Length: 183
Image (cartoon, rainbow, N blue to C red; front, side):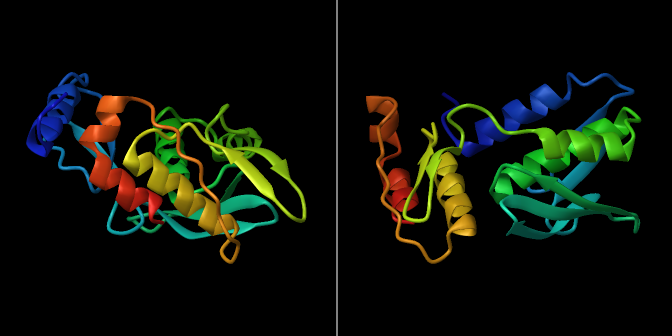
């Protein structure tokens, strides 16, 4: 749709400029956002808000949130997996903080969230097998899902069934799909 990476970045920057002048742009610190709006970045390192000590424990993802200025927001827990979901949770936490939602309400809400249908949807899990249904249909989404599975099952054999979403996407991203599925 966009042609190349530069056009994607330009589209994001155009979108950001639609933010109200007194609004806040919350974004992953890896994005190349150019704006004079107030910005809050998040990431694993070198960001205004950072997630640390990410781990799977007792069937849940746990992580701590720290602000660059030194504030420790404590530990959060969620019943979805993967670093990508930790980043999504971190952006939601920041959004809630900007809206003055109490930190304990945020923590409870995240702990209660069960995910969405067909996104790392654990359909069957017993001592022998775990069947996960995931609608990932882009190479980066597939990588994120496979990494999340490895996070939970580091030493288990994986069998992956890939159903292409669109012929053209499969053709256009053939090398990227091969790279993602090689995980």
